[in-house]
Length: 299
Image 1 (cartoon, rainbow, N blue to C red):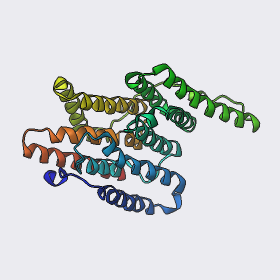
Image 2: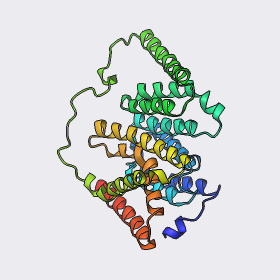
Image 3: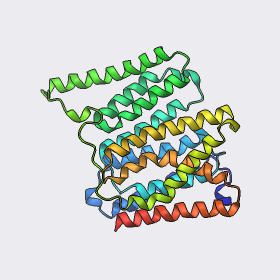
Image 4: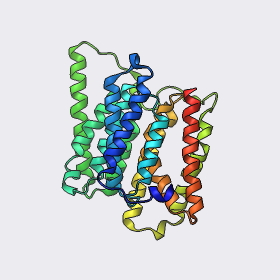
């Protein structure tokens, strides 16, 4: 199976994966059709669909089927059938921001920071836990932009426009109460009473750690482009991980935020394993682990 998934994908692959995922989402929702939030489900589906196009943009996996397959499995296993509207917006906005930041058109990318700021501000207003995404964008500008001050100004200007519009609307409808949940790290961080069924995902977590460790072990052997793109994925993963650690609790659908970067990181790890049997075994361990996690949550 690993050899089949290692073949190069083509332009017809992405619509096929999106169509398959659409059928899965419909199947999950039809079990409880009266409680479907069609708006939230539609936004989630758009965010997931955009994720497929990001693999070709980031281009870390030789355009193979493997990351597309892993991404599909991650989404199926972490998607509960319906998402909170704020989390759905975060999933979509993350995909849009990544599409902009990974654009090959330098002029388009550099001129879009005001739009990125507006998206970040709107997403923060509907889902305050998404603030680490803004930190990721700032680090990205500092690390890649030749005109850091100007681009940060564009980003902040986009944020200000949306925030002022929001405050203006709230003032007109006489909603003047400040919600403290908009402050980062508001409230006391509480450890989970039980990590079941999270520890079922231990094999996947171990593979992620091994892959990241191996990356830094062979860091100097990689090309500058590969190092840049991998660092980009890791910083994005860290931003999403902060949201998960501090805000997830028992809402395991937050793990969807790591579906894209985890697919890239693990598929690269599998591709560089020295033996074919290791690659095949690793793939099946991931699939089995995610299926067990889904069954445990479903039951």
